Amino acid sequence: HEIKKKLLFDRKLVPEGTPLLNIGIPRVLNMWEDFPFWSTFLVESGFEVTLSPPSTMPIAEKGYGTVMSENICFPAKIANGHIIELIEQKVDRIFYPMVRYNRPENDTSQNHYNCPVVTGYPEVIQSSIRPGEKYDIPFDHMPFSFNSPEVIEKSCFEYVSQFGVDKKTCKNAIKKAEAAYVHYKNRVIEEG
Image (cartoon, rainbow, N blue to C red):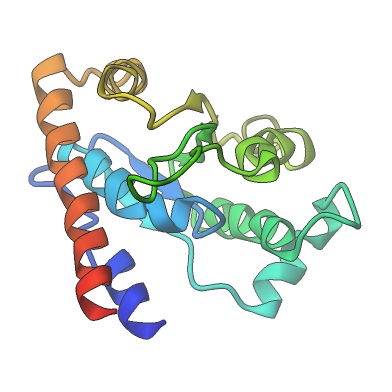
């Protein structure tokens, strides 16, 4: 587990030059496995990335008052505390996309849907914590899928273009992000 966490999270979080914004990413649910992609994409697009700290009971307890369902899984419940952590760190924005399709794990995978809780939890966060309305920190939870290069490029560009990132920079950032993700997966296999 320690090796995998190092491979996931030990990466560059500040771009060359002055960052456009500081974007917070919660260390929860699908954002774990997708962190090599997202952090690389955002940094290469010109953003500083702040990752919420590792989960602890105090972090979980910070968010308990905003958990909307007692019978939801603990990994989802703890997400609320991670969002509160990012709010307290005063990031400029919080990035937590609703990822419907993930990448297939291997050639024999029958599907690559994310669990409905994983897909929809950013919307729950929006409804329960309301980072933009209550804390004046925009909460970016747009729909996203990793099911095709065209969808990835279109969705990524729609997101970063609002901050003045051009298409060439975006495409280059996606290319580096995909390479970082593949490198991470290959290293996990090698370590295994």
